[in-house]
Length: 247
Image (cartoon, rainbow, N blue to C red; front, side, top):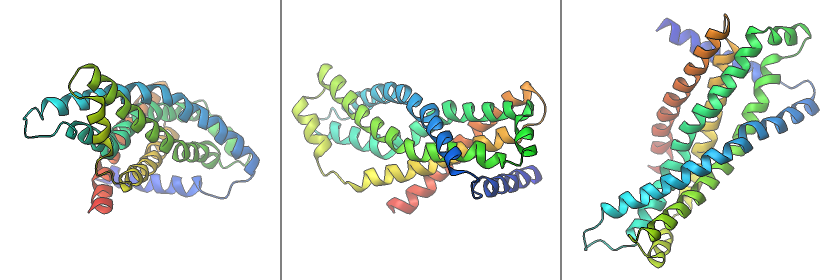
């Protein structure tokens, strides 16, 4: 319990330093642009591939579980649409990014800590927490909603391609299903969750890396902790946000 409270307090103290007033905005702008490429653009590939196949699987599973003739065929498209928008493209993609982006952030900052690069920044009078972590937070919060939109479009498209190719649903019924009783607020709900999850992934992972003590072995452990803690926190906030936004 003491370790949890100590770590929790350390996390909030680090956030206070991260969101301190930047010394030179131009430097932070350049760093943010670099992080947009590193954390955002380089994640498009894995998000697109996973979303396509998950959309296909969701469509096939929905089809095989609604084979009863009393169910209209368009329910396959409707079920796939809601599953992708409400849960997969926000929560599941966030868990995937926690593994890819979170471990990358923790190992990068952890390496800077053990090689004394962070200490060097402090000696030069630079707020190392803000300089290193803030651009990552801003980049993820700005770009992850686009990843979610890409995931939604790719997942629904993958379901349409595989569903029609496998003969479980016609193209007309699938398109009708994804349009039927559509609630635009579901997109907003998904994007809100994505922004919160992006903040969790970057800050929790950065906290693990920033407080590494030791050598390369501890950096590896910090990367593992970053993924585990980020994933658990994402699942916790998924429940909280769902209750708040959909109740």
